[in-house]
Length: 516
Image (cartoon, rainbow, N blue to C red):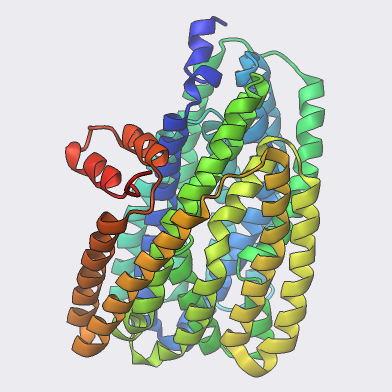
């Protein structure tokens, strides 16, 4: 394999700009599916009612849990070792590893999908919904392999486009079947078809991309052993991740509470995931980039990039969280309907807890890229105990509010140790606290105005005018006092470039602290 070919995939192609672009693609790949989910959530709320929506949300949660539990460890391991192998100019080894992992995942997919189908056959209701959810899970597990290959090669656009396009068509199809009188089973039939298309599309893209890395395939048993060992640790982490980050509280709500409480929690969780936790997607691209740089021996580049990524993620998260807290409760009443107003308190609790999420994801990605899996494993295990314990104690008497408290406490328990450990490993971290305090103050000012306008006007007009007024105040205050240091602003402006014109670049530079 020629050096020129590897450079397009390896360390020479791994720059701050490439990681930032990857982060934007990853954010888009997270954002649009969450938008799709919110649209489907609204439609389900209107057509199915609180109880029907709660049942659909629970089946969807079980399906997603199966996919993530069975794929999390292997997908993370595959993307990491593909990135490291290509960074070390061993593309032929990466091709062989990808083939081995796909064979393993084929068997895993049959087991996972078959389990859900069996639930439907033995009496879980609605029967057809569980069967279609099983077929969707089978395709979803298999699709994780080409997705991991593309991610490991940092082919962010290819990894994103297929899912976004098919997800869009799936959303439209779901809305149509609901409008025509279809119920829960029809929704899962559409999802099963959508995930099958994703599997076929990403499989073709991954095969083409990894073939471009190397024409040869070289057996690498040592690489497979390391990858499977890492996958074992990561699989345990995936289980704990489901408990801490992916609505494990649904099981307690399903047992102790009602379908309507599941619906309230589902709306709050989906809204927070779609908006407040969206910046966390930027952190997810760090693992393959770090692995690639690690394979090339570029330790200092890893160290420099981590501090900047932390600062910028916090700055990006603060205004989004404040805006969600200011306008989210009104949005629930207006968009989902007054029957779902009780989602307000879970939403506010989860918004506050999610301030730590992007930093936690970034720290976890760094440790994954460096193959430091024990600290995240221990931290997430402790968080899992906190989550399950609080959910068992609070959900029976407080429903969705208790679930939100359990989830938030678990996130803090998982995040703080990983952030501290990552800081010690790659520190000292230059947080530049003064800039972060300025960003928080500017965000609070914009949020207060947004809430005041929305509450005064009311309805959809109040939401729109509140968002507009809050944005104007936020950017006005930001331009007046600034919250970006000059070097961060210049770096970000260079990444933004001029492809979208000069306005985005000038807007970034306008946020610079005067005299910095």
